[in-house]
Image (cartoon, rainbow, N blue to C red; front, side, top):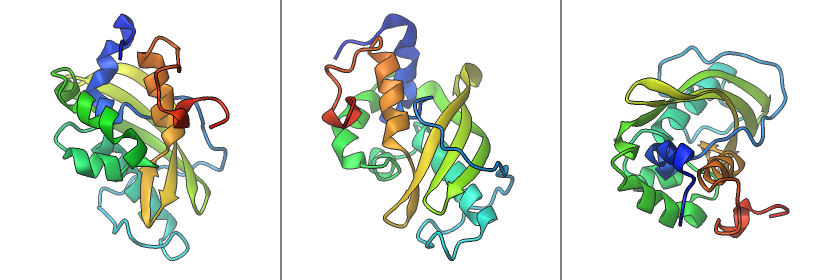
Length: 172
């Protein structure tokens, strides 16, 4: 797969080159401020808002962290198995080891969806700032929404979706 040179930095979070600006769920904005790691298996209806916000932030940042094992990153992406080959391929990138994400805001839109504002850092320096993404509650875990991941993949691919998984193409 050939990627746009200006966006090749995104390979770092590639395993999770996820979250783009594609879908930002609307909702009232509460900020995630807790640093605790709540149980991701709590049902949204039984999980407090603060716990949900903290879980979203924790899981989002873990997805974009090169130190997070690939199987865990796959599990933290909505429909992750579809994207597993891409995540594995990008995990080997030297640039990927320098990328992280910093979540600055999470707002619950519903018990199963939230908007996320985040920045992608490379070597601790901002590469993409104030990005809008979406988190979804799937199978007991708050995950990076596949629409967000597809958005980043589209950027990496110079705006083209033809070589991306069907889940990333319009109408998928």
